[in-house]
Length: 573
Ligand code: ATP
Ligand code: MG
Image (tube, rainbow, N blue to C red; front, side):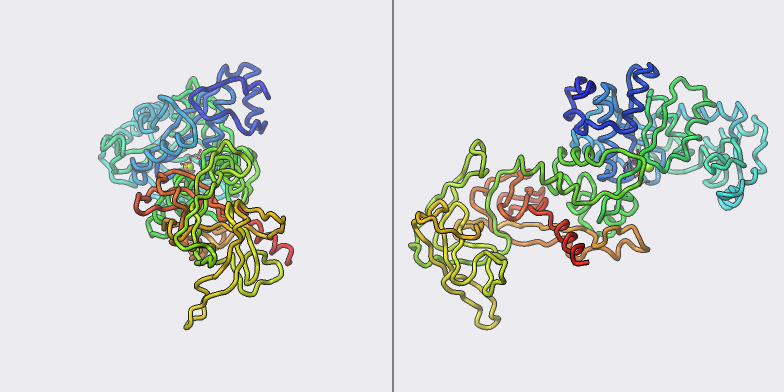
């Protein structure tokens, strides 16, 4: 245990599951040791222009996790400077997702928009200091004079406008006198800087749009780079953690705060963003999937969004464990989706009672079982831990087993039911297949005729004879039919972002809806309940579930089928 673990924050998730010591933690430790900061303050600053995804979870766990680990505070800030793309729906979903992940911002929910007045004041200050000017070049001209990576840019003809004229124009921009695109306020830095971000970047632009928070008060809006550092400064942020693509923006972050002589100037620290195989993570692409109805919504269980994962049945603990496992570094990598699935299984295994359900039923008639007889068999919720308790499972003459648990002509390695073969029914008896009934026209197997051995109740034979497999089952007369949604990857390609069109990699089989048969003990299950359906996977009762129409999402299969397929492919190569 390291010393940080002693700092407790009672309202929040368990401490720092990673116990890690990444480069950001090293910086913070040093800052606390040298007395640069007495206490740290971080923030998670999403733009409310979409739902949060698993990449954001990494940033949330990092920022809130650091605050917890070091006894500091983490703010939640809506980075809402672009009125065109933002919406209150997103503001709400973001809060729900962060809370669900197990983190608390107490009363520290902030909005960049609430700082617009201060930002405006600062902009006037920059103008008065001769460090900002109103530029009236067209967008195209601004772009063409910006220069390239190897060549400097050209100064705007408006660059040396007198301060008074700049102030007047800027105030009139604010008053709504000009059309969009006619003027911008630019910082006056250096058109020859090797860093393009320093070549007189825009600070304010005209946008005649209503803002979800400030309404029609403003028709000029600050640019991200300008708004972000000022927001950090106002909130007293000590470590402003962002993703690597902002590395080249750091000089600008520092420039603004230096020129404005603010009291609080955070250190910007960049880390590598999270990428996961078989997913896209750009909010633009995710929005497209939703708008074009490739999925059922932002919280579709196939989406890499936090709300999708929640609806699918992932647990916050599993996601936090995943974020701890991947750690924080400077190198861009793509994490295998199966690592996330591993974390989900690991957590679900600890918390899910085991029950029986059949996805693709095959009728089995047990010929020597008395018609009309029903036995209530005792079935524990966990095989090794009696503290989980048990329930009764009815057994009768007609049961359903899984279609794939029977083969008429089994190959060598198939150990389940086959003609003449004996298997165990979970918590029940040994049964033996004596004949197969087929549809006379199609030839499809519609029913198995079996016999059972009454001396094997509970699953063991008195003569110690063995069977090679144990099947799950439900009693046909007692089972409840329910809807099961079986999910697969949304994309068929490991890196759907590669290539021109990510839509061409959409998996047509990402969702299979089946009518399944569940044991009667599940009749009273509630939205949000989790189960392991033995031998099939972990399931989660979906929002759409009704008492007379239960709906289950398959959260995840029991085995890591993807890793297995990949392994097979690799060994085949
Ligand atoms: P967009 O896709 O609209 O460019 P974004 O993904 O950067 O936006 P924001 O809402 O600005 O989304 O992100 C909020 C915070 O989450 C930022 O600090 C950002 O760095 C972080 N973040 C976003 N995506 C990832 C990711 N894939 N991995 C880690 N952190 C991320
Ligand atoms: Mg962003």
